[in-house]
Length: 305
Image (cartoon, rainbow, N blue to C red; front, top):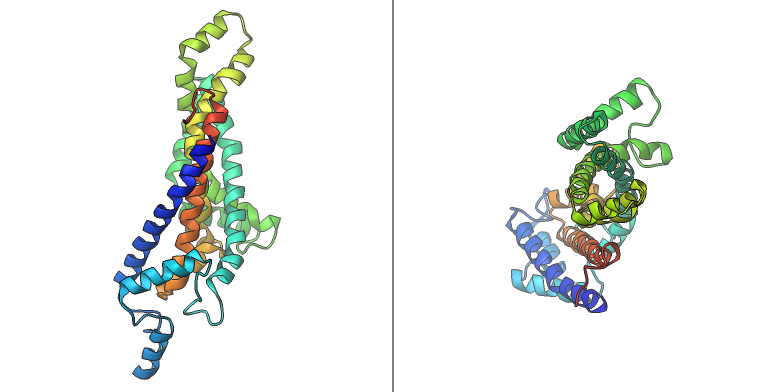
């Protein structure tokens, strides 16, 4: 297992470099630059600003220069937010996004896995049909519909919850439900399918034929093995939830990574976009590493040489 961890950690280096390179090329492909929106600024001043940030150099030189500084922990300075470094921007926004992502992911696990277990154990009953109906509807509804509907009902009509921001427990509820609904629906369907397949395995029939209590068979044999596909998806999904909550953050005016990422792309703020790309890719890679480790915990048969 130690060799696996070391090997995966080493593999993160070229993966992050590729992500940075692709992000760099995409940003360079967008017309304009961080200072083209300035009106009435003499060309000489624009040239000086481009020279200050190294934008007048060849693209390959800019890329390798960025890699060199990033390897030393220097992600640069924002080109549009004066006197703010990329680390400052991430330090302000990342705690909010990770808070929202963890809450939504926890809600999804709390609802989705039990719903999938009940649906599998009560196959072809009212409970199964109800869980699958919720799974279908919850997965089909996009965030930009769920969020405004919840806001209209619980904030505007009933007045129970605030409409926006991220200022306290009450303001956390609607964004968490919005982001966690589709994820819980996905976990419910995935858990149900995995459990139904596991229940048909020979070792489960053997355990039940030996007279073991049904609850013991489910908890010690069925559920543990059924969670392997769930864990496989849970790791990357946690990374995507933390880093991909842009729509939810926009709907509820939450000052997270999504706000800065979207505004930075629009303003061609290369330093912030590149820094966020490094952060987001690292989170997803780390989530995949945790999944690989959990494989061996859930199923002793799965070992890496």
